[in-house]
Amino acid sequence: MRRALILFFLLPLAQRLAAQAIDTLDTRDSAVRIVLFADRSWRYISDPSVHASDDIFTEYWDTVSVHSYRALPDSVLHLPVTLTLVDSASIFVMPCDAYLGSQYGPRHRRMHAGVDMPYPTGTPVRAAFDGQVRFASYNSGGYGFLVVVRHLNGLETYYGHLSRFNCSVGDWVRAGDVIAYGGSTGRSTGPHLHFETRYMSQPFDPCWIIDFEKKQLREEEFCLKKEYLNRGAAYRNYVKTGNPIAPEMTVAYHTVRRGDTLSGIAKKYHTSVSSLCRLNGIRETTVLQLGKRLKVR
Image 1 (cartoon, rainbow, N blue to C red):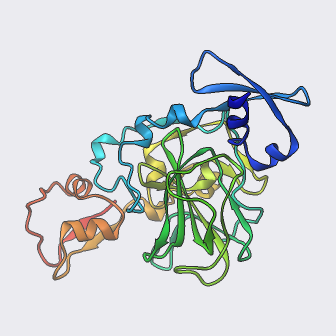
Image 2: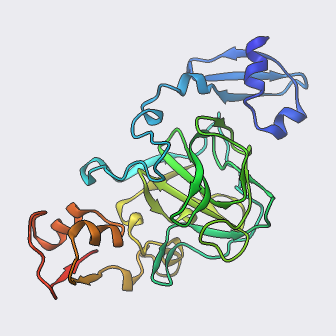
């Protein structure tokens, strides 16, 4: 009975209010329990205490840096990878009940690494999937008050421009739990939720996995391919042309100026030094010549 009560409080708030847990049953998977309710219904639920020691919640677990995989070599990012988004023990919930405003992709000479949904200040922002809060703090780089949740499949979801938090680093949250409240902090021109999906700190268009019009997932599983991490790889391009990468974004160059370094150029174009070296047939120790054009993608 005690376990039933503990697992009951790990359910999303709406379900806790609608039912009373009376017992739990073990399954063949030690991380999954069956919760029985007084109304004779039941559901699977994952036990976060079992997942606490999983590699996904220990390796590159940085509660200070917004992007915890920044130092990860390109060779470690093995793609394609299939991500299970929901299963019998987990669900998806829209982060907020709002329409899609600004979309993913280059915007005003900056990379807009997520989507924006106009949303009034003070309205609840919910966790999209089950997971553990890795970051919950103010970010001076533009996000304002930001929450980052890491999920069991390695995916991370970012919730930016918040007005205040309803969670702390290390909290286990369920899909649908209120983790914060909408706002307009950071680099923002009005109240809205900035929402990102990242894998190993690499952003990709959330529209690849979420149909924002229907407010539901496109599929229960998603195959993340390397080309989806390209700066111009927006889902809308795929719908229009069958190619996720916009033609004007397939190749880009940077002209070397005084003071440029490979690391500085890589940071500017959201890529890595090793990737620049590979694209241009140079080494990390190569002296950059003024006026030389470097391929950056």
